[in-house]
Length: 316
Image 1 (spheres, helix red, strand yellow):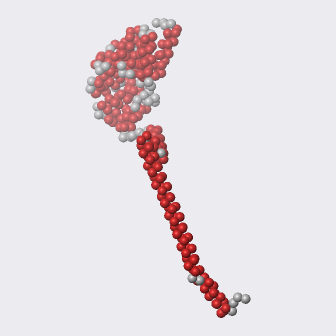
Image 2: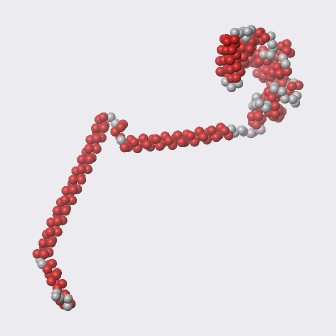
Image 3: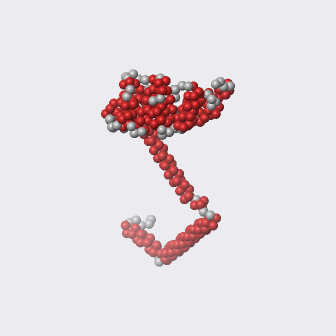
């Protein structure tokens, strides 16, 4: 189906955004897919994109509807495995197993057949048939030493199935093989393997971020304490800022009374000093008059003259 150029451009822009955001921001990808679906619901590529956006956001019923529509439009069986996985998501693993045995599986390429095997094994596990899940995954593709796009996921699923039936030694070996094939980090095989070996990974960047955050918190706390101390000093300097009018008048009255008492005390001290000085002056004058009235001064000098005469130092 062809679309007018302007409409085709709008649809294409939305599909590009779906592809770009599908892994990192699936909800946003889903929103763009709904826009594209409203613009061109009869285009198979739009229905398929909408199906995958619904699938990654676990809207399995919507995803199944879109995949079925795309398959009807194209006649291709490429979406058969993901349609079966939608049945699993809807809690119908038995339907997924039925689809795994359908003729459409023979139309799939090698990658599609491996994907269908993974879905079937998952359905067996959903039904509690863990031994059957192990058998389902045992295939020439699993035994092959060549690394294909699906190899890491197939080995990982097999290791997980072995672990479910308590075959831990074999499971560890297959997790290790999955790590060797998983060059793009599609699985968490490395983490699973490390956990089995008792190794714990520490995120150094996360620890540094935690240290930086703790330092920032400490600095912020110090700043808050400094601000509180500054506020307390301001409060001590001016307590009237937090008081009402009547309280301010009372404080001012107390301060005025204190000032009056200080002034009265100063005046009293001044009077005492003046009285003391006057008394001292009168006593000095009285003593002086008494001393000279008794002739003590003249006698003092006369005695000196007599001594001078006796020693031969008389006045000339």
